[in-house]
Amino acid sequence: MKQHVTDPEICIGCSACELACPQKAIKSLLGRYCVDAEICQNCGNCIEECPTGAADCFIEVSTYYSQESQSEWTSLPT
Amino acid sequence: MTPSHLDTQISDEDARLLSKIAAGGVIADWQETGGRFKELATSIILQFADSQMAGAAGFADFINQGTSINDRLQISKMVAEKMSMAKLTYDLLAGLNFNSDRYIANHSFQARVLRDTFFGFSRSSADKRLNALLYPLESFDDMLIFTYLLAVMAKLLVGEFADSRFAPLKNLAEHCLPIESSHADLALEMLKKRIPQQREKLQVSLTYWYPRVETSAGPPDSLRNQWHRKFGLKQSQNVEIKETWRKEVTTQLSALEILA
Image (cartoon, rainbow over all chains, first blue to last red; front, side):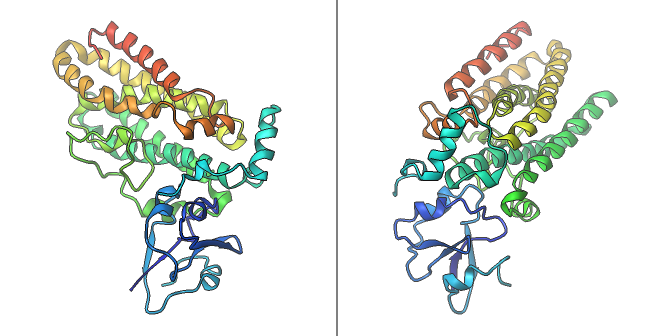
């Protein structure tokens, strides 16, 4: 299955995605903007507002990564 | 739709920056900035860098269509300068933990849409290039008209950044401004030589490119432009830039007896 995340290597931490999310599914943890897979409705508002394209990122997963786990990433998990 | 990021309330960090800028202050680096400023400045910076990349990718195909060795050298120099300006521009984002190599690898700057497409002001690309750089070039003469129109526009936009209150952007723009001006001059000189034999073809290209490049000034009454001016990233309204551009290109092209 796919999980919507932000790409840590091109996210500049501007908070545009957090402000754009109508579900409040994105929050900043340790300065990283992380998407809660249980709340995200894939509306795409964050992708539209993101200035670098970091929010336009979906990865294949077997179980969802928590926001806490995402906050420790320095690059996308392989 | 949720309200745009730009519609949200002014935060304390926004207020602090706005107050500093209103008092004539200069923002020295990213450390001084907040979320809204970062989003606005990054969009400008990526638009310029991505446009340089897309321009270089498009022009490179026409280097060997120059009719003389000198023309080929001049076009290849322009491509190299665009790549160099793009690199310097992406480097501005290094302070934000931005991996420009990864960003560049994820985008296809050679990609173009069908010739008859017209997007107006709507965004339609994964990268942030100006819409004018999404349309395909058809011939060497077509490339010259496009280069001239867009380089004049770029000169005006970079001129805005050169007066920016964000020091990194201002420094970059001061370096790029004479280069962009030289690209407009180069295209105009080449056009002058080709007008006698290619007037009709150049006129067709001008009719095609004029409205597509004109939108690069941005839409009128733009909320984003209002914020750019509040934060000292730009000084002029989009309509003012468009009008300055229109005057310059129509004056110079009328002298060549082709009409926008």
